Amino acid sequence: MKTIYFIRHSKAEKRDDDDFARDLIEKGESAAKFMGKRLKKHKVTPDIIFASPAKRALKTANLLSKEIGYKKEITQVKALYDCSPTNMHEFIKNIDDELQSVFIVGHNPSITEISEFLSDSDIGNIPTSGIFCIEFDVQSFKEIINHHGHALFFDYPKKHK
Image 1 (cartoon, rainbow, N blue to C red):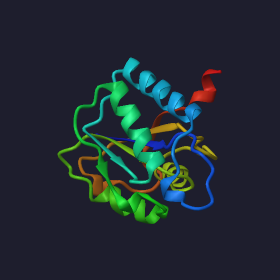
Image 2 (image 1 turned 120 degrees about the vertical axis):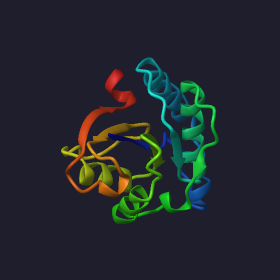
Image 3 (image 1 turned 45 degrees about the vertical axis):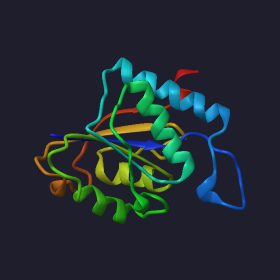
């Protein structure tokens, strides 16, 4: 079994000059910590965390990792910034098969689109700080194909307000 947690970065500032450098706003930081606490409550710890190197995604990954007690380095992947679902699927197929459970922290629309493409769900949109978890009955990430993953959960901060 392989499990992927698709995580959309938290709420970020609006900037026209440099999308890559957009930082989280206070509400986004709080939401990331809240979701980290939710993951910790359910004893979720990935083997690895992959994150887009964009400031808002990397900061979201760092806040989540701190909350769940993840001690390893976060793996920054340039390809996760502004990528298509096809490119993300190729990235997933190349994940080391020694790993069982992975976090992918990225951006919309690709996070939502890949989640729908690989799962048995039609979710419409993963909001900021949202987590969509999919389990695959495969031995290798290379075996992951469209619409064969089973959605385990879909959680985001506004569900708890």
